[in-house]
Length: 403
Image (cartoon, rainbow, N blue to C red; front, side, top):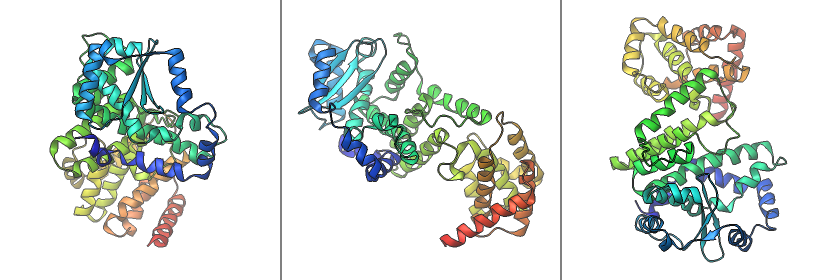
């Protein structure tokens, strides 16, 4: 992969959300008003006043990182490097008048090896390459006068842009292991040279975290600007596997999986209900229960269930077992409902019923028998038949209007 290929593997939500923000009149006004004291000259002056400009030749491992960076990412802009005194591992990039300014904390330079530095530098240059510096996300996120929709979109974009920047960092260092070490050290603050951060083990923390979020019913992460570290590692692992496969379609598959993971950090009322990882157990077991209403799971239904199955689910085995005992699906659905520690909101319950209708319609229709089974599932959640009927009527109207 080369820098010239970056648009092919930029994380699509990063590009799409940036375009939507640029098109927002409120965001345009905020950007126009954030000019005073924030230009390139001011940025460079601030660095000269509070940091030290560093020639890579002074630090051999930094020089090796820069050389590797230019090898992996030909065409990168001229850089002006600064190091500022800080015990935290961190860095940032900002536009300069003639060069891109990259600033690293002293801890980053002291504790990361050449490969790890290449990841951090590549990550920061990724922000510059993808135009992330053109929209002052930090300023917008702190602006309490910004419309709610735009404010939520800023945070979603910040998380999405980190996925794109991580990919550039991974390409820059050329090593999944180095990227894992760097991300682990930055996230944990553990800088011992003996650190062995297995990408697979680090990424594996994501499932445990996701299970905890699902069980707790937490939906309070939408204000966080960066994805969870295990999510970022899992995203890089999926991206690397897609690249190694040689199949361009695998990147699209990885992108969809990563978007679903990021959905865990979105507020409960955003996006399509069916894409909510926190509700997938309900969609899978409830959807399988509905699909078996006529005694068989059609091919299209089987494919849909495979797409929404919770991680680690053996879909073929689950379908085979449900054929023998369909009521086990209802039991698993009830088990998932009882397993939540936080009470479900009315909106979440609505999304579950609505999503199940969407799954039932996979074969082109929602039968009377499926509605009857849907009412049994809804009863588990305390929804009376008339409430279920109202959601079904809304679903039918929206699908009819959209036809």
